[in-house]
Image 1 (tube, helix red, strand yellow):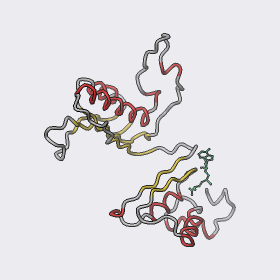
Image 2: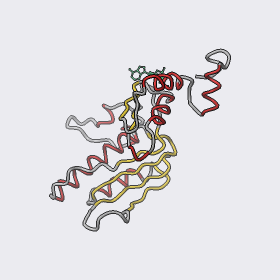
Image 3: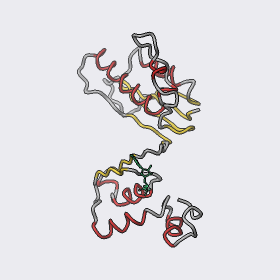
Image 4: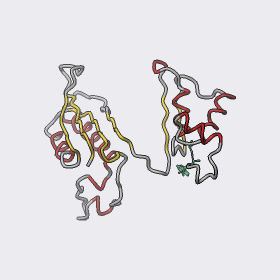
Length: 197
Ligand SMILES: C[S@@+](CC[C@H](N)C(=O)[O-])C[C@H]1O[C@@H](n2cnc3c(N)ncnc32)[C@H](O)[C@@H]1O
């Protein structure tokens, strides 16, 4: 909320500016926290209707030091883009190489779909001759902001090459990385996509 939208800049608005909160609503949760201390170090918090994100800021601050863990997740009707999307998702490995690779590809595609939206991904042919994109919304734009980055873990197979083919024209740079911490007997590999066009 801007000062103009709310009339003159009041005390809480100015305090929010000074402390770096995105909205004066931060102080509502600050007060609730002060009185009730509901969010404790290590809490898992879900913030419904989180935009523009002031309660998210306060909730994160209430989690305490990193070593105690905790997580804050927010949802809102208003789309808020992400600068970075990380997917370290991996299926429960069965040892059947083709099965594990296929499941890993499916998870990778889910991450891509969420980050980029259906409108940027290739059309999937359907049985009735239509394509999934024709049925789907052209304005399905995904959660990754322009200029944003994407990291996706995959189990390497012939098919993983298809994923980088999809990403190459969409990002400034797309490449593979096999981190040094990856076990030598693992087929995991990371697709690193930099700078969404
Ligand atoms: C008062 S604002 C929340 C402010 C937020 N707590 C903060 O401190 O930044 C209310 C939010 O509720 C969201 N909202 C309303 N209906 C919703 C719905 N059905 N699902 C998700 N978010 C919704 C609105 O988009 C709006 O961003």
